[in-house]
Image (cartoon, rainbow, N blue to C red; front, side, top):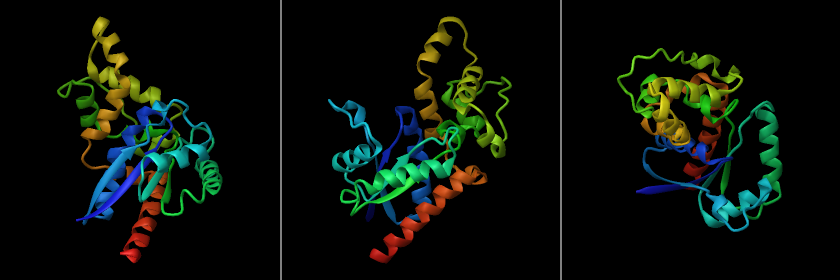
Length: 216
């Protein structure tokens, strides 16, 4: 069976939640390929690289791949500015990228915005799948306008958990793992096609697929 190896270079550990999303997109585009995913854990290094160009080069060195996803949250900068930053950094390490296809992953405003759509997944991640608390999950078409998706998602997870007191303190200490659990539970990410940033990522992946098909 054919194989595609990819590495995700993200801004933080919580952004590992993007891996199930990327897996789903690649499997839909390349069903005849086995997908092998790696997360670039550069923080474990004695001297982690600081600049984006150094991080890109080190990711490829330590996690060889066909496809490198470089994640940056748009935050208040906008997608185009982040694409420009990644493009500039990649030009500084062109030799390292000579055999690797680079794709920008830029959620608007941040990764958590792409997890604010599945009530069932959120309740499951909160370990209270039969809960009936009113969660007030925003409409998927509006999440890119949410000023702080991370806090919004955290608040919703806390509500969904139904915990209080000591149990709530323990739950809050594990919020990052709960966020990652959401994307692991979701089986269908097609609702995210409502979002422009997601469609841009999808278009870049299709370009890679077309190039790969020509090579094969």
